[in-house]
Image 1 (cartoon, rainbow, N blue to C red):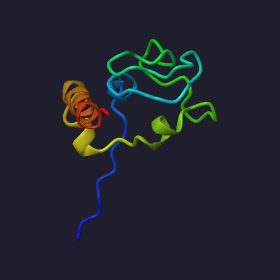
Image 2 (cartoon, rainbow, N blue to C red):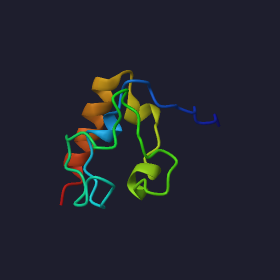
Image 3 (cartoon, one colour):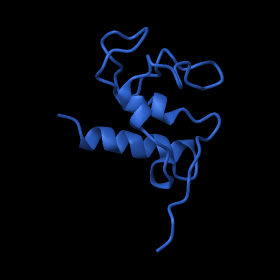
Image 4 (tube, rainbow, N blue to C red):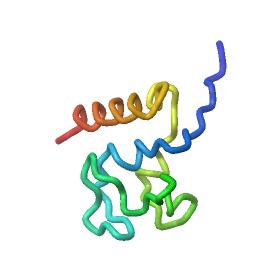
Length: 90
């Protein structure tokens, strides 16, 4: 059995900060974040301003990069996450 390959965030991607909805409140977005809308905590260089901080929503902390989710580029990551959003919509 082979070990899973560790995947690190791709610089300049931010798909996980844009594509999915977040239903819990977060700083600057007390009602959560709609799918397809950039998080207000996304910095100009496409990084999370809350990364590693206690204010970061549990959803964000639990979303870990994977080869399946991230694909070969930002467009694939956005499409995969949008598809997951659609499939899990109530």
